[in-house]
Amino acid sequence: MRLAFRQLYLDYGRALLRECSLCLRDPEMARDALQNALLRIWKSCASYRGDSELFPWLKRVARSVAIDELRASAARLPSSASLPTLDEEPDAAMPDELPGPEALTASRLALERYRECEARFREADPEAAAVIRWIAEDELSIEDVARLLNRTPQATRQYLYQCRRKARHYLAPWYAQVAGGEG
Amino acid sequence: MSDREPLNPAQEAELAAWLRGLRGQAAESGLGKSAHSEGQCLQRALSATVAEQPALSPRELEVLLAQAEHEGLFRASGCRLCQAWREALRSVWQAPAWRWGGAFSGALALSLLVWLGLPTQSPWSAEDGAPAAASGGVAGGETGGAMRGSDGVLQLRVPDPQAWRESLATDLQAQGLELRRYERLGRLGLDVELSGLRAERQPAVQAILKRRGIPWPADGVLMLELSAGPAPTQP
Image (cartoon, rainbow over all chains, first blue to last red; front, side, top):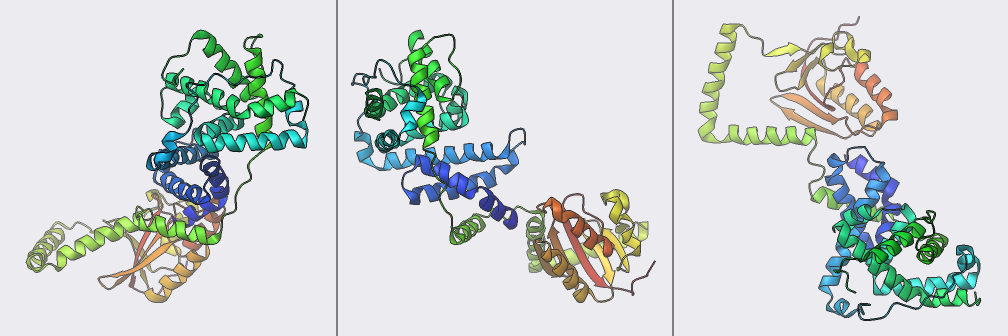
């Protein structure tokens, strides 16, 4: 068993740590989350029915653990409650016409701008930023996200709508720069 | 709006279009075109900035293994369960109040069994889960005799139990298997967990067992006890 556990770590440890790091910016927290995820995977491997591929299942567990850790740490830190919310703010102004996706990432300058904006977004709302990345990477459905976040599909729709608003807010400088032809 | 208010149909449509763009899917019949485009741009930017996989050190692996051990994750195997049962029974047996009562009950049960002529052990047959490759080995391998006890432990008689067990243990450990040695009532025991065995190593392990006349255990846990017996009979 110890051997199998070691193999699990060697085969999937790095990929799962990446999933945890996307959500938890602190490397120590991400490593703790990886450990908890692997322990949870090991404890619940009997519930893996083999009707889905192994790696997506492992990722789901790791993401779920990372979100739990994120929420727990947010609850521990009173300062996180004072993060700005967008409830009272108007939607970020978007350029009337966005250039094609290629144009937005074609130049080094545009990508650097994007990275800066995304870093601010992750700083302000790591869960929303991680969820958006996971949807883009794995084409997650609303039901997938609902299971991951332990919410109802309806609540998840509302949450994702807010995620989009936040993404627009934090990425607005990037959209504006590229739409204005500076990139 | 807060995230507790339900979305109106226009917002639902916008969200759906944005999500389609974010997943890299095509827009649906011109609805929410700008939201789709926004999601598509974001998807392109995310895929252009793929996060690297961080490095993991062997030390972290050791920490994790120690933690898993500490949490008892490796205790659930058949070997460990057997060990727990044996230890529990041993502690009951060692309690003074039980010792004489147990001895009396044992003697009574033995007398009854002898009187009724019932065997306490049965031959370990090929139908008990042994693969065809190993089924012929029970009588013709290096062992002088193989019988399965009522507790599922395979009882073997070999000329030199200590050396025989060490040889088997060394061969199995070389295949990456975990095992546990013990001694009970003067017999040498060996528990081996085969369930975690990698598929490519299975033929080698089957050959090791077959060579010694040991059938493959159906439940993936091999439990052996060795006692000194006659020299092996060669086929």
